[in-house]
Amino acid sequence: MTTSTSPGPAPGLGRGYADDRAATVGFLVRSEEALRAAGPDRATAAPLHSAARRARRRFMERHAAALYAELTDERREFLRLDDLTARADTLVPGLVPTKSQAEEERRRPQRDKEGRETDHGIFFWGLLRDATAGPHLLEAMRRPTPKALAALPGFRATGHADLGLVSVTRRGGTGEVTVHNTRFLNAEDDLLVAALEAAVDLVLLDDSIRVGVMRGASMTHPRYAGRRVFSAGINLTRLYEGEISLIDFFLGRELGYINKIFRGLSVPDDGTGWLPESVEKPWIAAVDTFAIGGGAQILLVFDRVIAADDAYFTLPALREGIIPGAANLRLPRVAGSRLARQAIFADRRIDAASPEGRLLCDEAVPADRLDAAVEAAAAELANPAVVNNRRVLHAHEEPEDEFRHYMATYAVEQCRRLTSSDLVENLERTWISRNR
Image (cartoon, helix red, strand yellow):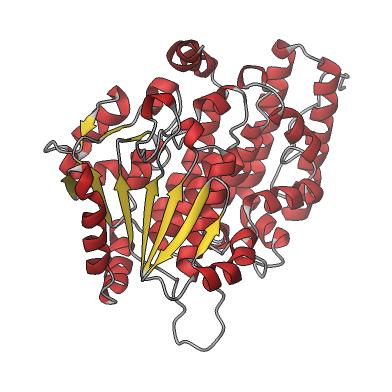
């Protein structure tokens, strides 16, 4: 017999998708009722959340492909992460947080969150690990964003687009993406990630652009006023305040603009070509001053990295208490296992001009020669054969299935870190108290 604080026994699965879905929904609905009855008592809520998440995991393990097919009209629709969760909430109530639950969670500082995003993590873990749903989801996330498509006519006509925190300028055959989050030293948050994805889309969509370049603007921050900065990584203030989301930042960033730089845009098959191909272009990163955390992560997908000779790279994610995106996948391949562990586990600083720095950048030049070095690299990479070579190189260097399985694991492990007791303590010790 169930009580107001118990959802009863976990659902038995194995009777087919429809029956298993109905059984899981019933259990999850009862779990929510029990959570409401428990109120703010976290000691009572914790085992209820755990049991519900076990039920979600078991359902996704068994039925990810069937669920995804229903969500996407048998994979005829290409939905982004937030659209998938909205449909899943309607189709399988309780599988993911409702819109109101997600909004309520977003208003809370990181310390006070209930951990609802863990349920998003389980959902995308199940989809990404599935051999049918996962590749389709990756393709959907590589489609151009509506924001970029709306800005494209104006960009083609003028050669410039102001996306707020990011601008894009066409100079000859080069598309320059400049990051202007000057207040936070170009640290990334949900808004900047969205702007960067639209900017990358514009560079890839404009047929007159042959090479993309990413660089930071001159800063207004007192400590670096007038100096360009590539990136200070994740915006830790926003993370502490609870404003960095799993979908829009941690997953959307990796599956969105970073994967588009690496693998290009996915486009619909119009039936005219004998083999559909992505829209790819070579990319250059121009690193002024430093590339910290997420800034260092994204360097791993660029075709050419050119840094000022006084610039440096660090990956302080472990000190902060999170996982540094896909760096755990890519850095060992680029820099070797030992250096990767030193950078990820011990926050080792790597100077661009050092022998170790040359594993992360192709050139380290005096700051006053950085413009000329970028221009020369762009001319070299404009060779049409570069795209075909990078496509073959990437297919064997990092097969898409390898990336997909990594992201499935990342989805749940990053959730563990975001809800861990030490995360806020790390932020208060290493960041918030210093800024106060």
